[in-house]
Length: 219
Image (cartoon, rainbow, N blue to C red; front, side, top):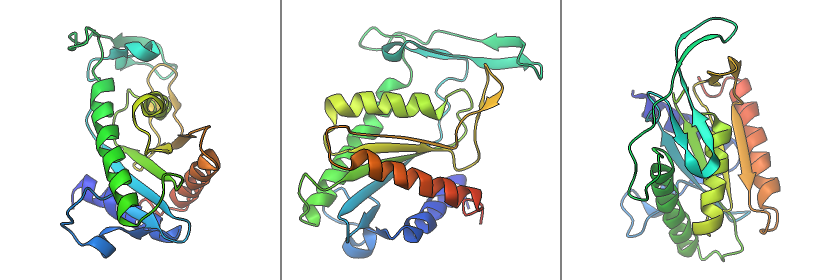
């Protein structure tokens, strides 16, 4: 079983534990629309899961829109001193040194469509909630807090069907190369203009942490 398959099974167990079912149980494996992964029919909430497993900053980099510098440790002591690598990526088509924002935008664009069309299938309104969970594998140089803040910035501007984002690290918390401290296992953010969006995605994040700490991610 690959890492991706293992993570998908972990989230199937987690979703079932918090009363979500797979959308594919209702629509089959090849529906005529872009379906999300999970639905809570009682509360009318849709969730899409995306897995990030590409190291976007193998030699460090920058996220210009957030003024974030990403470094890669090359020869580091226990106290965090040592050598780090930082290399500006090539300019993208917008003239920015950014190797992560555009790939993340594509992830959000696809998730937005899946959530919107799944809501339409169940005849949910725009007031019903749709969330994105991003499972971040590897990516030792990228804090989940950076990912969730950039995702929030993008969805507020462009993707109205995503009401909140939870970024978690199902293979264990990452170590910040500049502080040598563990990053959080899960961080979330929700729309401030949508009723209960933040409270619900925050609760799902707490439930994920409980699931993780009890070993559900490794069973």
